[in-house]
Image (cartoon, rainbow, N blue to C red):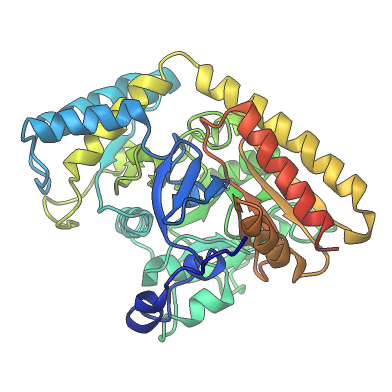
Length: 422
């Protein structure tokens, strides 16, 4: 059978060289539903990418689609800046009643703009305004976004280099187990804070991911996060948890920090908060930090009303009874068992696996093998991406709504891809 090659000429000649994901998946996608995508030629692909964590509820989720279509068909407001609208009210009420109050969180909700980096920029800006200091501490292999403030607290050298100017007022510290357990947690960080000769300007805040997604699926231990929270309190620094990719149930609980029992001062959310893949971002912060002047931070698309509709529908559908968290943890155990088997069956790969909930990584000692595995998986009908500073980790990020059979199918393709790239 002859497989026709898709005509990618318009993308290759007109679109910028900055494009990336399309290079690993050289086809033209046309439709998507649930955990599957379909290209123009009718090929089916099982999606273990989920829009980089934006599609926790799958593609074109029928419940969310119905809510969106009903809203559009009645000529609901689509663009409203930060005007008060019925869609925004419904979302705020659902978010308060379904997410904040059950967790005893009294955080205020800010709509900073439609993307994750908008949320991070607002968080950094507010922390500096509240504390009257410029320095922010981040962690090795962190990723917080591509705008300048977010890049300043991002670890990846390639991404940082794209800024074109010095990235200042950010200081990296070792993430959990960065030094392989050979050094006591936070001993370096606290010594710098206490030593007047260290050269470290007192930080306004610390920003952290509980699981570093782009950094290689590096999972912080609950006790490490608790120690970090206490360190911030002792030294009058705000704790910012970036939950843009790991929030909205990705690790099991709605917020990824719940397992550690900490309460961040500021929380950033985006990606799946919109439910349907609609752009939406939130910056949450304790009420006493809400010292903004009206209009001091704004943006044209900070009030995406169609996203409010799908976001509220997602909360009302999936987060009122605790079942989503239980299901995600069960699916996570299914993934862990399969990854353990893959590692045991391919000893020559010297591979390691790690993760939480439904975010997992498979790291190879041969830095090029992860890319080869993802390429072979694509040929076999599975969408996977790499992560880590050298793209050495195969990253698994399926929809939370994936069925056990679909998950098993994708894991079998992954296992085959590992075998066939040895």
